[in-house]
Length: 356
Ligand SMILES: Nc1nc2c(c(=O)[nH]1)N[C@H]1C(S)=C(S)[C@@H](COP(=O)(O)O)O[C@H]1N2
Ligand SMILES: [Mo]
Image (tube, rainbow, N blue to C red):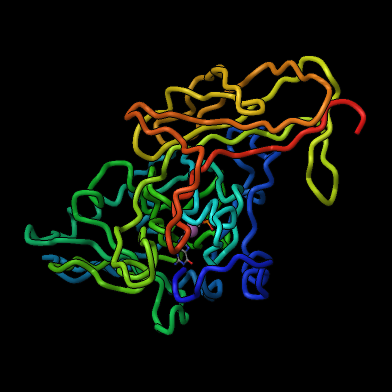
């Protein structure tokens, strides 16, 4: 994210390496309310760190009255909360931009919904006695690497106000099981509604600071920039988006879908980090009709939708387009930015109806 010039050409070796390490959610997994853990998307910047859970501690320090050093058992003995939360990578959609920002080349599949369990961060901060002149809380991971020429641990910050929101968790379980190594074991931050980079995995340090945090993953990566020299604006909440389960069956190489003519039930999911999803439109060759919305799964989880498509023989392009309560609606044209962040351009699914 950052540091490499955008390109128009085929995938680079660097992008292919990243794509082979970091899986997306296969779109047929949109059929599940809760994404099975092995189908949830994954993004690991550096290496999965080696952590000994028996000696692991969460250190809470900085601008606090009572610094803390908490074991996993102490955290598990605190009040717990479980909730379905949809998480999406801020880079989802990047590979559809032209020119293409060079980084993890997601198309649309960097999303998943899990039942996360943990203890609310807020009470832990209150017990540590965070001082009132605190500007931000910095969350440090145990993973380490080089990005954009800068050596660092993966670290991100939140304003004190966001960190104190009741839905923000120190999460130790995903889908009823302890976190798996790739998802941040033994503990991660979970910030519902925000793009995934906020939810720091392999969490080991929480530090209250009085000045805005200027670490690499905060001040340089994850910014909406017009160009490399533009300081840009920080990426935060997930933009509104709908996805569909591609109907019919795929051609192996092109992924074009093949369906029989007649009524084809199409379903999908829609979410927004800013407000509730209130509308999904289904598009066939640029003609749009409202889809039916299903009951929400939870305040911070995606919402199902369905549409009965009358498929006429021939080649078609299907799409879906969500709108949230705040009036945000997915764009039909790309809105380009240098790092390829937050590209919620509508999904398009090429389909052949009848024998090709
Ligand atoms: N410590 C640490 N936390 C991290 C990351 C990372 O590389 N290191 N990746 C972030 C990004 S960019 C995303 S999108 C989510 C992905 O979470 P998942 O792999 O559990 O789906 O984790 C975030 N937390
Ligand atoms: Mo991400």
